Length: 228
Length: 412
Image (cartoon, rainbow over all chains, first blue to last red; front, side, top):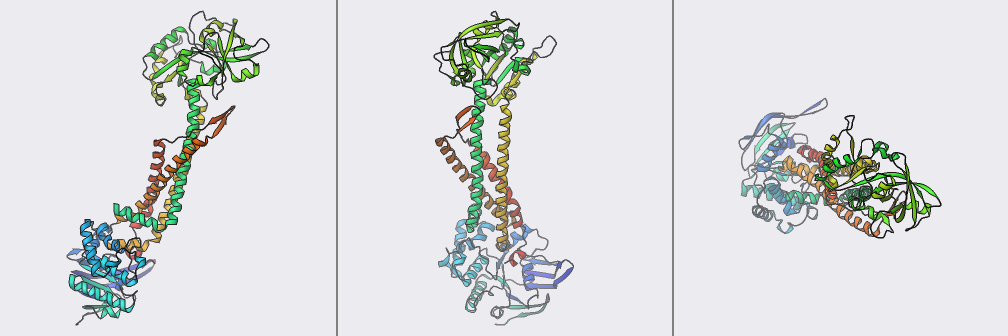
């Protein structure tokens, strides 16, 4: 599903050259529930951004579902993300001027341009799935952090993406809510066969994944299949 | 597009005080420009109307060299009968012309039998002059019936200075072009109010009386031919259509005649051009207000929403859609300012017409401003404001669309 070959990412600030990712190769299969772990500065978020078509590698190639994504224009990259990838962020990043319903509907209007009936059906199904149907008309400032992350998950899934990338999705949540969110994502992964890739420090996520990839100083030092 | 508009509208509402302040600034700018345009337009049209409809007509034809020495009122530069006949043949077939009138202009001594002064006179045929200068009659007061031979319409200031009344008999003494002096008795039949512009203090007599006073012996000689056009907007075309008149040559083989528009004859035309320049200056100020206000708001808006822009970009919103979102915000501010500003301006113009603001020009006082706003003025100002709003939003919108999603998502 995702193949990354010999990825390298270098940041150049003035005369300072920082090699964040060093010759990283990786394969991710459909329906996997994977976590990238490692200390701060190990390159987790950078790998996530490159695999999620938000950032481009300095060297190396990435292929998603057979499509090479390196060298794509900004617009093509945006369209590719809109069609194939969902994102869940640490700070939820909901659009404050839109209601819960409209936040989830946003990618279907602005990116996929689907007809209203289909939009409605998809949004209501997901709202029910994440348990936010009764809050659908509220704006993000009227709901809790856990509820915001549920909305963010629904928004990430509404376009039926093949892959969802989540950068520290539970970092801003209390333990109980974090558990609920992990369970929700796990349930969705099982039911929809969606691939989830996390970058996290959270032990609760780590203990629930199928595969754990450990990064240190921009290199994979361990790639473990977890037995449940 | 509806959804882009909806989101843009909500984004504007998010910081409603700032939005209201900016929209108010644009609204005030629009009101300022439209009210200024309406008032200056009223002043302009009144004055142009007075000049063309009660003094000069739209176009005048003279013998070559007359206008250069018009202050002397030279009788030796009058158009002779042959010239008049030639000009008349050209005027009759011209589709731009509504009417025309002959005038003999000359200076004379005006005596009330106890004192004497000088007077500038326009000798006219009222049947031609009044249709050609439709506002002239409104300047004449205290006149009973039509203007006939044997009568004189005296300028207001002379009436006061010479202490003459309607019905009094006066004597006019004039030199003809050969230097021969002649006098005629005339009855004061009316008082003509003065207006700003050349000939604004002239008296009027019947053209038949002028012929007698100047001993023209029934041969028609006129100082000028005054032309009224069907549509003054077509002044240039009409002037062009009269060019064949200039083909008439004198003995030296040079054009014997000259044609002037009121714009060339009246110094007031320069004031009108200045008013137009001021109009443009005011519009430039408006453009600056709109440009700076919207640019400021949109730049602030982009800076405040970097993370949000990063989020929608990460989700897959194409750069062009992000551009549209920000352009719509600027557009809405411009449309709001233009619409509300135009409506309020119409209201203010309506009130100004009720209040009736008066003004004075020289010795003319109590003139009432009647401002009005045409659809073309409202549309042109609105289009400028909306266009500039869009232009001002382009740079921030492009900046937003070019934000790197990774960098933007890191922003707090």
